[in-house]
Amino acid sequence: MNSQAAPGRPPRVLVIGGSIGGLLAANLLHRAGCDVTVFERAEEDLAGRGAGISAHHGLLAIIRRICPQIDQSIGVEVSTRICLDRGGRITHQTEVPQFMSAWGRIYRLLKAAFPAARYRCGMQLERVEQDAGSVTAVFAGGLRIHGDLLVAADGMRSTVRAQLMPEAQPVYAGYVAWRGIVDERDIPPAIHAEIFERYTFCLPEGEMMQSYPVPGRDDDTRPGHRGYNFVWYRPTDEHVLLPQLCTDAAGRRHGASIPPPLIRSEFIAELKATAHATLAPQIAEIVARTAEPFFHAICDLESPRLTHGRVALLGDAAFVARPHVGMGITKAGLDAQCLTDAITQAGGNIDAALARYERERFQFGTRIVAEARRLGAYLQAQLKPRAERTAAELQQRPEVVLREIGSPLVDIRDLESATIMTGTSQPRLIHHAYLSRVVAKRHQIWRDTVER
Ligand SMILES: Cc1cc2nc3c(=O)[nH]c(=O)nc-3n(C[C@H](O)[C@H](O)[C@H](O)COP(=O)(O)OP(=O)(O)OC[C@H]3O[C@@H](n4cnc5c(N)ncnc54)[C@H](O)[C@@H]3O)c2cc1C
Image 1 (cartoon, rainbow, N blue to C red):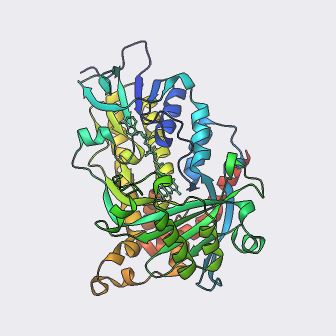
Image 2: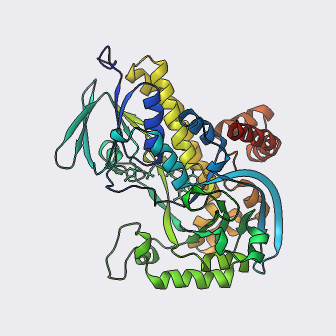
């Protein structure tokens, strides 16, 4: 079998999907000397997508491999988490240092770092063909492009995965995340003073609201120019309400999601009215001032494997963990880094590199999905009759939510080493004790990285 790229030339890599996962892989592989082209089906720039994200230390380290010049303007730092009750009073407070950024900020950075001529828009992959030593991408219109390796970074509803592993399907978790961003300058001063610099939770029965500062328009992180982002998880029945939410004013059904401008005005009005009825008034005001809230249906996705011949699945195409671990982009970066290092260290032997990629990234994916599912169990259980719920599904404990959700340290290796270090039969308890001990250290590493 010919497992090397042709002698004398670098491996030719076709990256399908030009979003954050695809761009992380493309940039790293390009810098490692591969001959990389990105194929994105969207005609237009993707920068308008997305909202705020929590960023993990690992992500920043990977981005620094691509853009060594990045500084603190990549995000906004928060260190205090609070929980507000319905009356707007702080009921719980804890210190969890964290760096918040925005999807568009990371996307623009990665896109600008990649050669424009090698990023091809309007290229919809239809199928993949392969033999022992090469792979062919077949695009709408019939264009065929050959490569040594195809990286499927085409997202949760991946065309490549649907062809090669049709049994792996996203599974709806029973709730949606409503999201939105308000400009810092549009927040009334009294509310700004109480919440803006904090990661804030509201926990009305059956739901979870979290909000935090992020870079503003044009990626501005100067005080007064930032944004304030919210993510509000709300149980939503799959068969009745979700289809209604995904149907526009003209009666057209848009699958399992809908473009934000087409969300019907009565659903936005209901969201804002419910915010006033159930959330702390400061946060309800943030929702009220959001011009165009939008939602994502929350899903789990697990692929049975990460590689298939000369194809590697990466990012959301491979595994989707619910956003409670705030890991999507970091995981895509770790996948991209592993694949690149495996190819480099295998001296261009693609098959050996893919075997290593499968070994190293598969377990991470399955465990992060399981961890996120655990964190979302309370929300998922809301559509079950009360009598059928477990104790954990009946009540969310604010002190646990504040400590665990989007924790910057939800990292499988840490989790493993914490368990091994103590030899305990209660890994979760020890996990958190361990996390709190290393949080300051990890935060320092993060600061050192951005300040270097
Ligand atoms: C509510 C919510 C909150 C989140 N919060 C965070 C957070 O705080 N931190 C974090 O790290 N992550 C977060 N995430 C997850 C994060 O957004 C994703 O994990 C990440 O964007 C995945 O990137 P991706 O490139 O793998 O996939 P995608 O962004 O889905 O990109 C796939 C790309 O492939 C293209 N494509 C698809 N099919 C084809 C085809 N056939 N041919 C060519 N191109 C194709 C698409 O157009 C798209 O551009 C959150 C997600 C949600 C839903």
